[in-house]
Structures are given as structure tokens and as C-alpha cells.
Image 1 (cartoon, rainbow, N blue to C red):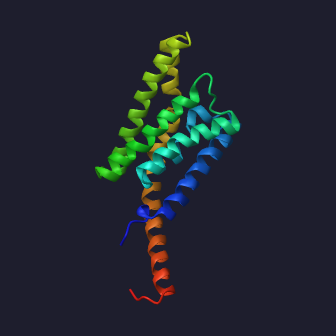
Image 2: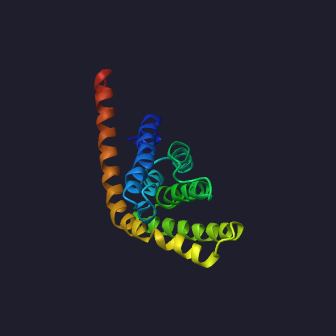
Amino acid sequence: MKSPMKEPAWTIVLGGLFLSLALVLPLLFHALGLGSAFLPMFYPLVLGGFLLPWSVAVSLGIAAPLLSALLTGMPPFYPPIAPVMMVEGVVLALGPFIFYQKWRWNRWLALLITLGLDRLLLLGLVWVLAEWLRLPRLFITVSSVLRGLPGIIIMMVVLPPLIKELEKQINWHFATYLEKGREAIGLKK
């Protein structure tokens, strides 16, 4: 059976769903003052990396922070949080794609390595930006990385089983879609 992720219609639907979630979840979390702790935009970006082709996942990783910044002002362009999140979005999309889809690592390890790389990238970017903005480097850098730990922990607990279930559901719906299509044009299994 052909993979649903090789079907343009499925990738468009899932990419659109993940983009919508990446725009709406931060609004809900920021309304409660929990955005930077729980990293709500990252959940759909990581899911995209696990479930979508790399080109769609990377586009999602760049477009979500950019559109959110343009539509809601969150994340802001200055201080340059939106550009940092766009770079993080690329890592959060490519990491799972490479480790899970290409190299076939298990979901947990792929997610752990991806999130670790993201935190290292954030550490480096904030270190450089803190100097440029003349902010206390060590404090800003460490607090930026540590602030997202609750979200990282939740992602590690919630996302791997969710990805497994989503893959199962997507494959089931795709098989049903193919079967109904064959029936509609008069082909047997």
C-alpha cells in the first residue's frame, strides 16, 4: 500500500491542521500566561516533523512563527524572538524527519535528540543575541533555555504515544479512502 504521507492531499490537510494548531494553541496558552513555559507552538511543529514530508514540515516550521508574529504580534520581531523561533521550527521539523522517518530511530529517541538539539540551538542563539542587545548573557541564556522545561517534559510524555496513534489512524483512514476509491470506479481488491 502506498504511504499516505506520499499523497499530496493528505500532506496538505495535515500541514494545514498543524499550521492552524500552531497559530491557535499559543493564543490559548498566552491568554493564561503560560506560553513560554509550555512551548505551545512546538507541539504541532514536532508532529509535522514526524508525520509530514520534510519540505512540508520545514515550511510549517518557518511559516507558523512568521504568520503568528504577523497576525498576533506573538512572537515579537523585536526583541528577535520570531526569527529565533523560525530557526527552531526548522530544527523541530528536520530532527524528527531525519531521525524517525529517514533513519528509523524510535519515536522517543528521535524526540529526545531533536529537543536536545533545539535547546542547544536556543542556547547559542540567545547567547549571541544577548550580547548584541547588551543584555546579561548568562542570565538571559540560562533562563531562556530553562523556561521551556515544563513544555519539553510534556512533549516527551505526550507526543510519542500520540504520534503512534496518529500514524495508526492516518494509515487506517488512508486504506479506507483507497478502498472506497476502488469501489467507486468498479475495481476489486
